[in-house]
Length: 310
Image (cartoon, rainbow, N blue to C red):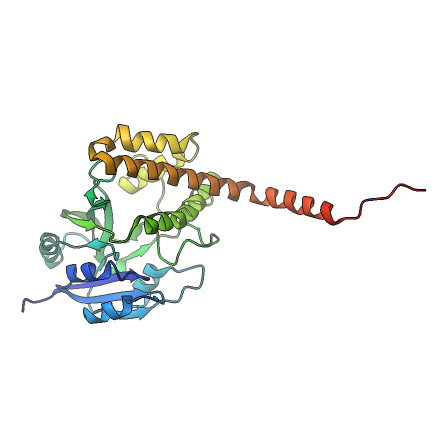
């Protein structure tokens, strides 16, 4: 048997029986694997234990911390390095070879991994989905997910969505790709992005009101890739016709049409997703006013109609 790579893998999960087998097979060479579960009702726990993973239950308090940060704070990792892998992601052997070499004589305290996203059985190479850099491998004592002040929004799930890892040390980039392959159907894609749009709407709201700057990664046009992205997002949230713009950017400017039918469907769904975010942002901005109108209308309906004097 080949020696295990001294990395602790963290896999957040909830009802992921379709994706877990392939995911766990892809991390079998890791020295330690934790599956942090949220009271799954399918076979997720059974599958995880069958592959030798340590299953830990996470009970979300509805606010903070969410699952990944809680795990980084509380799990008894026996390795210095942690690799965070979602259930619908795979770590190919070539990437494992690069990981093993990187942590043996590390030049950095964390590494970005590039991700290939598969959709409808096809790698979405264009449309802005590749490269897709994610900081997933780092010394667990030196990295935590940022807080974007979105705790007030319900129905976003108990796991970090698109928050970035904030490191206290230097970071580098690995060359080999990881794969994102969801074996579930389109219903689950739409369901997941319905939850994500709740979170995104709150992020938009915070950017518009100045509530999202404290304790997180700043926006800087001349900073790193994440800071530049934050700078552009502060402009994006103020633009009109964002659903149409999102489709045009993904399908035309970023060459999504080269991905064929899958690229077209993906761009249309991104446009729909942007529209959902906009509607929920409107609800956040004007929800109080709308509720007052509803309350006033309801009260007038039950108040007695004054009768004319005889």
